[in-house]
Image: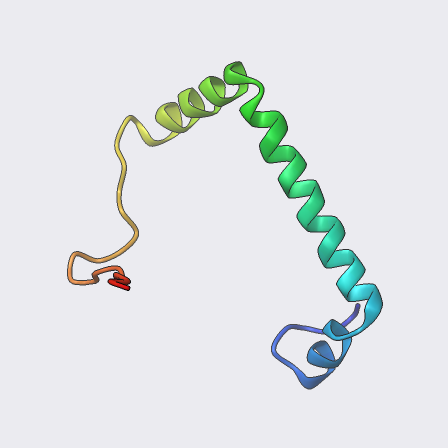
Length: 74
C-alpha cells in the first residue's frame, strides 16, 4: 500500500473493497491453518517442544504482576 499505519491515508484505504477482500482471505487462511494444525497432533507436540527448548522450560508472563485482566461478570 505504501503507507504507514495510523494515518488518514491508511484509514481511507482500509475502507476499500479490496482491503475487505484481503481481510476475509487472511481470516480464511488463518482459520484453515488452525484447523489443519488441530488435525496434526505431531505438529502441536513439535511446536511445544520447540518453545520449551527455546525458553529453557521457563515461562515469563509479559504482563506485570499489578495488571489484572478485565473480568466480564454479565
